[in-house]
Length: 168
Image 1: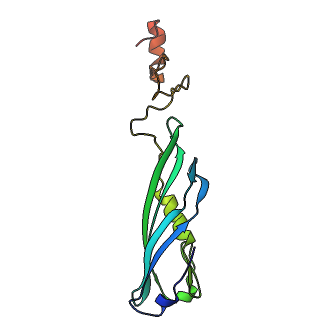
Image 2: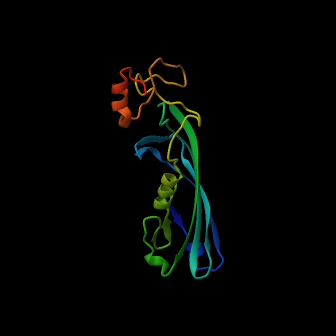
Image 3: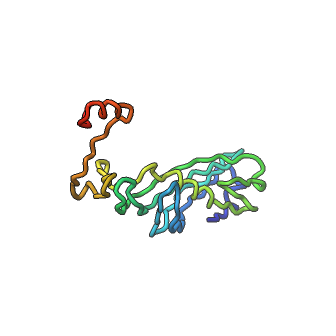
């Protein structure tokens, strides 16, 4: 995603508004599959503050994934912001987030980084998702199962054997 910043780079106080869309598509990240059906909105501004360029970006979008507990499809949204000051000789700027070639600034790396950092640690269909039964695989949000879910501390197994009835 490239932006021509010729009007900002040599003029103190100049500002350029950013309004773009980034096509993300589908990808796998941290063991989950994410699908962005629609482009992610990228907004922000690039401002010349004298000795540096101040870049402020915001990404917003909707995605689908799968619940980490029960496996059903989840639709959710992301929103992330970043601000960066780039100083020094502007023609030589080259980092993972921003690449400046002449008067063209490529913000693809920054957009990608913002999308990844805005994703949740867990995808849940709801905060009270019960997940799947670990024995029979029944979706506990939809029905109950008759599996014995009693958990015993394995360190006390010898006592269950001594008692003879399996209960301690």
